[in-house]
Length: 145
Image (cartoon, rainbow, N blue to C red; front, side, top):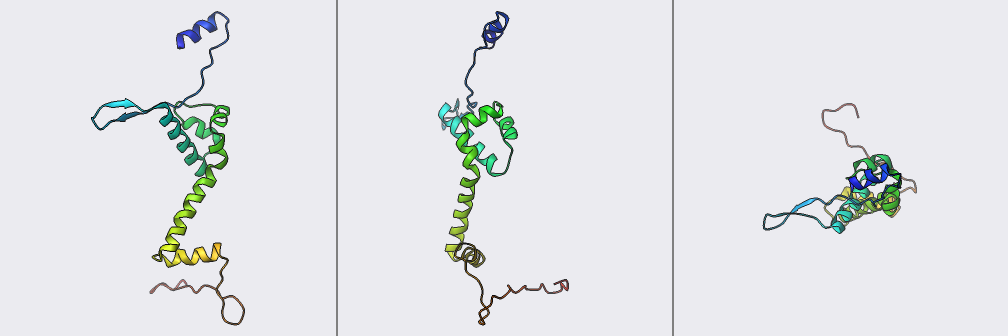
């Protein structure tokens, strides 16, 4: 393919444009053989990776450089538009699901209280109609509080 591009360039013909595709990884099978993963699996892995990078706040320029093979930002936007648009929201939903399970388990009272305050709009009342401040516990031997 590279020879065809060089020959086309020399002859004044337009370059051959090949679509971008992620590099398939080598995968070990149960029998110990190493085979290339399917192109479908390579795309799935690339989509998960882009979603992860978006969620942790990487710029599109950096994400484009980190993919294998590296691509331009335009190509990133073309192939991964959905992941770039909703990657953060998907990860926030996953974290909210974990927080919900922790609150519902009853094993983490702090998370249950957090969930009720942030999602159910609960507040502490002092009995007179006003709200109370959350008491701060002092650490024995620590006089700074």
